Structures are given as structure tokens and as C-alpha cells.
Length: 496
Image (tube, rainbow, N blue to C red; front, side, top):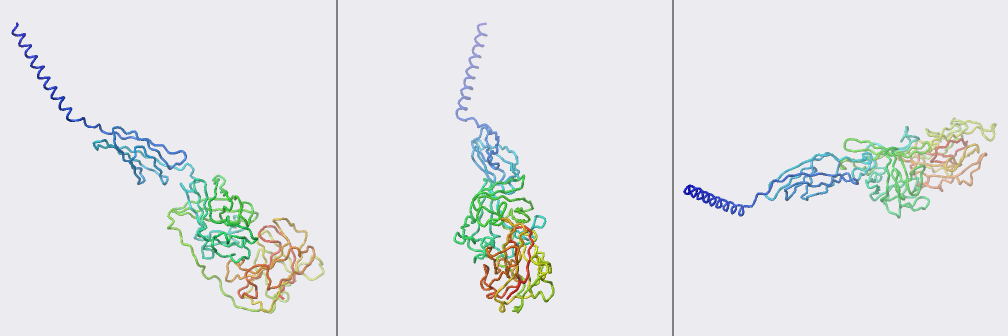
């Protein structure tokens, strides 16, 4: 028994010694060879900014990672752990995060999401950050008519070289609420603003020294600058604020025209979307007077048509003729009562041969009904360029009834004669010779003869004696630029 016990004890001792050797050897090996790093796990979450829908903050929840590679799905990348990325446009994006451990082992995680503009209506006007508009360079871009149904029938403008500077002007709406007008170094001399000043009807340098209106007021606030805007998409209106902010024509205001800058103006605005470009239509509606404009914004500015910088010849140069008699008595339409001054189509209804309002038994006269058009001119188109060698003055008899309704901003007792070139100048009113009656000389409810010296016009370009291109004569009674009707009487319109 003792021998068996000893053998058992010896075997156990040997076994324990061997185990100790194995254990020691194993511990020694772990100390020399470190444990391999754990495999990485990639993960993230994101949040869109409440103030900028294009800005996204990414929070990294990866594990066992030492470096990170982000691909934001728009061609941009980052190696930051928790990047903040600003996209340049709305759309669908797939973001891929690659996480790597210290041994270079990598893991990826991706998420797809869509970036939407929370104010899609404003985005049409101002883009994701900004949007620039210029007058449409194809077809008519602006015009005036009596109402929206007959817009641009009185006059319209094309990109034909007659006003190239207005087609370069840019109007930019920014998402931060700012509105920027860039005059691109040039401005146009609107006749309503500049009257007969030399820059009227021309494109001139956009500098403060040139921005003096026909009444001598400083209007330099209309030059390029930064203002503010508000867009009411529900009611389709834009309001510009800031002295001199404008769009359309500088003089157009919310309720009426003004030849000086205003602090704010509101106009109607609608936007159409097309493939590659959008159109912005704006309009100003007054009493029976409707101005509207079309602006374009191209996705790729290179696709915008070029500006025509030189006007093509228009019309024809008529034969020069020096008549010896030019008159219209308005007693009748017979040749004995009309020589050269034959009324042509116009917004005025002229009826010869009506009773004289002062004496029905006297010779017949003409009835001049102004109508409700804003620009009611009685026109006489000649078949030649008149040479006024044989005349020194113009005269006309006018009877202004007190029964008309005269008011400030409405019908007036004004009388104006003008002579213009309409055969070679589409915008004949920009180069006419004008004669005005002094308001103090106007009488009512009786006939009065008004006479004008041809060589001393009230305003305009040159005189009939110094020009050889004049072929259109006009008469305005009751004022211009408004839409109030009135009835007047005329007789003996004569070039003497």
C-alpha cells in the first residue's frame, strides 16, 4: 500500500511540474505578442440645421476606429470625426462613412436622405442662396397697355439694340432677404424722368453726376445698390424696401409714377418654371394703365442670349417736302377745310362739323373726345419729312368746357403740341419737338387762340427749322399719363 501511494504522489508531482512549465511558457508568449485590435464598427446619425436647410451636422457613433473617411454624396469628402457639411443644392444624397482601426481594417456605413427647401415658393424667386434675374432677351420684355388683358398694346420693348443697357441690368434676390441691383455701369434716360435733357432716350454712364431729373432733383439712389425685399407668395406680391430700390422702370411706384426715388414699392409677381430657365413676370396696375415686365434666370448663364448692342435700321427715310399750306379747320373733312393735317388712327375720337359750343349758329368746329386712355394724342401722320421753310408759327383755337371733371392727378386744362419723326424712330416721343401752353394763359368756356413760335419750343430735340426728319404732328388736350375722359372743342389748327 505504501508503494502504491508513493507512486501516485510521484505521478501527481510530475504532472504539476509539467503543467507549471506549460503555463510559464504560455505566459511568456503572450507578453511578446500583443492582442490584435478589434474590428471597427461604422455608424453615424445626422441633423439638418433649423436655420439653413443645406447645412447638415453628422455625429459619429463608430466603435474601434482610429480614422474616418466621409463621402457626402456630392463629390465632397472629409476626414473629421463629426463634420458639418453645407450642400450647394437640394436633392437626394447618399453619405458613406468608412471607419478604420489602427491595423487598417475598415468598415463602412451609409445613409440616404433628401434635402428639401422648406420654402419652395421663395426658392423659385431667390434660389437656395440667391438668384439673379435680367430682362428676357427673346421677344418682348416689357410694355404698357390699358389693362392686363391688353398688356403691351400701346408700346413694348425688344432686345433690338434700342436700349441695350437695360438688358445688362441684373436684379438679385438673396435668401437672407437682401435685394441687389447692379446697373452694370449704364443707365437709360427715361423721358418721364429726364424730360428733354440731353441724356433722355440714351444709355449713359451710371454715375451720380448724371442722375439729375428734369426738375433738378438728385435721383442717384436709383443707381446700383443693396436693399431688402419681402415675397408674399400667397398673394403673388414683392415689396422692395430701401430708398431707390426698383424693378421694372425706376419711376413706377406702388400706386402711381414718381420721378424721384421712393422708400418702398410693391408690385405683382408670378414665376414660371421651364427646362433650364425660369421667367419672372412683374406688373404695376394703375387706373386703366398696366405696365408689365418679363425677367429670365438661366440655370446655366452661358445659355442666355446675347444683348443686341446696335439697333438695326427701322422704317425709311421719307422724301423731303416743303409744303406751302398745312391746316385743318375741323369745319368738315373736305379738302377745302383740310390741307395735309389729316387725323390718323389715335386714342382720341375727333369729330369735325359739330355745333360751336359758344354759338350754334356759327361755323362748325371739331369735337375732341379724350377717352380714358392714359396717352390720348390726336395724331396727324404726314407722307413725307416736312421741311418747315415756309412757316414761322403754329396756332390753334381751343374751347375748354368747365363741365369736364378736373382734379389733381386727373384731367387737366393742359394743351400741348408736338412734332416728331415716326418713320425712322419707333419711340417717336423720345425725340420730338414740344410746345406747351402756359397754364396761366388757359381760359375756360370761351374760344382762345394759342400761338407758338416754331423756333422757340418748350422742350425737345432741336427745332423744326433745324431738323429734316419730322413727319408726325400731335395735339394733346387734358394732360397725359392718366386715364380720365373729357370733351373739348378745336378749330383752325394752322401752320402759319
